[in-house]
Image (spheres, rainbow, N blue to C red):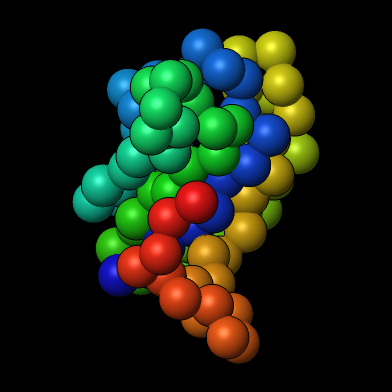
Amino acid sequence: MTTLYVGNLSWGTTEQDLRAAFTAIAEVLGCRVVLDRETGRSRGFGFVEVSDREQAARAISALDGAELDGRRIVVNEARAPREREGENRSRRY
């Protein structure tokens, strides 16, 4: 499985919209649009999981820079989250 980052999403893009855009190109195992915890509104990016690297490469080639809901989206392979040095993740401000 390979996870793709999808950026520059329209505030109105839903998970169903994202899935539909990628299903035509790759086998989609899962997808999500990241929402703001406080407002419940889209943060303008999301993630799509595809079955393998070959399909991921095909999706990146076809959709990076493509228009979705009136915006040119950015698609690339997601990077693993990393801890920032000295950051206490359990502390909230």
